[in-house]
Image (cartoon, rainbow, N blue to C red; front, top):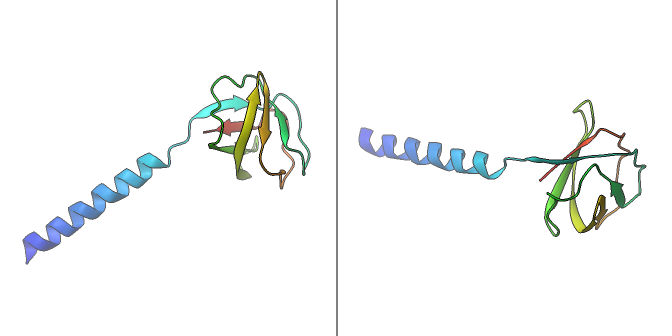
Length: 97
């Protein structure tokens, strides 16, 4: 019986570690200018690390606001989102993918 519980616990630990690893975000850009609510175009310092058709998380400078959006396209330092922003973000806010 103890062996069964140990196996169950080890399996849960491994599954939890896998989920935590899968949810890692890497900073890929910083907003170069303010963006207002309902906009879909973001001007960033560099768009070279941003991948199209993947989610991007935008985090406010103070870290209190985090929102996810799907990237529609990237052209140099302009990122276009599929949906309008629900929140305004100041220059210096970070983008993660």
